[in-house]
Image (cartoon, rainbow, N blue to C red):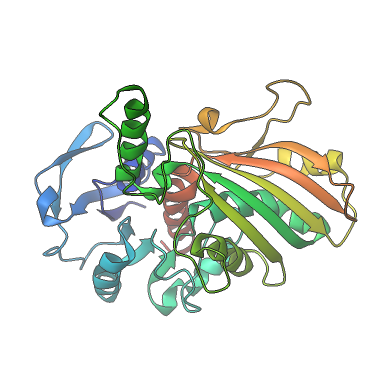
Length: 337
């Protein structure tokens, strides 16, 4: 079965990565189109051995296209996704616009593939926040075994999560530290990101948490289990690609670290690298370009009953965005085509 695919936002970081992954995984494409704003029309972009010329999203007709993978902001998605869905094209959306809509499934294929059945409500499927996606992949097999009560997570999120301009800012600021007169004033971040960490991602909410922190709790409940309590501290770090998370988990039932290690080792989408020695763990630099969610530093937390700590790392442009979107498309074909 081959299907027709539209990539919306094809010139952005995530859009380009979606095209790379579709080609790499030999996705069954009958025809494919790259879409973006008018200023990008005519730009050539790679899809395997092909070059696609970007077409204008504003004037594109989604009728007779099977799937559209959206990788644009919420405002633009609000305008175009409903139109595509109404025209019979199933939308897989990377923005936050539909994630909390009860009529739209929020899918991580390794975690809740059964929920995709609900896509028929609006002909739209939502892709979760990048930091949530990798965390729930690691939590799911442990939850199945010992039932998670509470999660305390601190994230170390790369600047690519904030887009290309944020990546450029880190690069220019880093150079500017060493070249007097070339310092770069923060524009994409509230403080200097080079040689610094910023405990602030997205807007602040009235209760003091940021929206990124709220997202991790709300999305984990929707994807995995509404009874799990989640508290997060989300931090932007001077890394170009790759999100890392320190996760403390409290279970209802006992689970030993050796048991957790074996469970994770044989779980889909996870690669365990956990040696109790120098370098026996994975860092963000090492996960770039890989499809897996890496888990390291698995150890007992003796300060609470039934507690574990884990270190979780993933390429946020892949599992956190593009790869998960393609996996949703693959799941959609398997179930409905």
